[in-house]
Image (cartoon, rainbow, N blue to C red; front, side):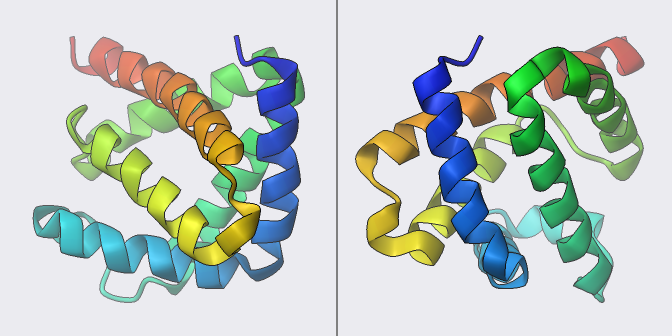
Length: 139
């Protein structure tokens, strides 16, 4: 589903990015709330736990890329939970673009065009699983 060269790029850049996962997630949420202010109400006022949760989910997903079957159940459950949080399928593209932006700002020159493409493809795969789960939960 995700070519091995892309998987390896995502995993290697994530190892660098997660050294300061809090910094990355601060960039991410700051930009997300600028790009889509309507989603701010879906999150708590104190974002400390939320940033830690995002970093943990990203870590599990990136590590799980080596065997996608191991994370599909978790991604499906995460997608179902997002229904209760008020997330909509149309939120996923802005979240994906925001994550790419945050990785670019966070990693700088290490976020090469190839790494961006690998992350973009990976985000698309992961988001499609979560969107499908949401649609199943609502449908």
